[in-house]
Length: 449
Image (cartoon, rainbow, N blue to C red; front, side):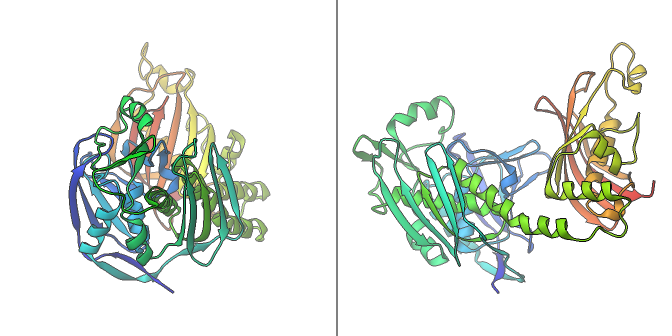
């Protein structure tokens, strides 16, 4: 079995961000085993981190953007590709802006940073995932099929909608092929796309120093092409970066035609879904837990494991809270250690009578309670926890940003960050119409009702 790897020491590089055109400093840091790749925004309060996982992808328009709460990082694919190509499993990427430096438009500089830092083997084994059955998808002009394979192999055809500069390339991805065949391949665009990109603020830092421009049959660049198939090789580079968002090293043969970040990330999502299927099946066919309160509770446990939706009746079967203190109307989504729930704030809420007369505002402590109740649902994956209550132990980094009023639909997004026995810690964000109204780190303990 291969061992996980991190960096021996930090490595830093400064440059221009592709989107903003602003100066940005990026540092690669060693990280603990099993922590994965994380982006840390040191320019934001609290230095929030975003795990490089596909569930954090919020935009795929010409690049891949990760987001979590109020933090975003644009154009992560080149950095992620360098880590994946060289077999780095755990690292922290510190940034003092919202995107890595674009460097020369390839991943060559990021590969150099990793080489300068050096690799350090860790005692834990690498987690591989080998596809168990093919995955096929089509998004617009993108067609991608992935087949079971012993290693990661990518075969790619690149072309624009007019079939200009059609190129094909394929290889097995190893640290050796990454260094010699892929890392130096630069990003590119067609001349007629530039006006759109400028108007939409997508390339404020773009230039011929960090991209190749194709105009009709001419290639505009500050240096000769680095490879005869540089365009398709860069597409493979992007695929490697996006597929690293699976969170495991993938063993598959990926065949892509006109790949895109949307298609790459959708393949990552479908791979994660396939990865989880055996666990869900095992849970579905296991005998009912001996401590389950009843068959209905056991069925709801299965819904929680599968990431399904819970209506109010099902919520009330697993949470003991009742009017006027039940802060959840519906669970919308459960993914791993993350859950999204909804509270429809009605003018009939009893606290509006005194908070405040003629100016009703939902108390901030009620929003904290909602976060704790939503986090408690994730603890209900264990049958012995059904019917328990999540008691507050602490609330840290609490911020109330905007008032919540009658008629608002309060979206509660919670990520369980740590559990130990009956004690859990979670990060919660409440929002209304896409705007954050409150957020907090809460620690709670499950106790008998």
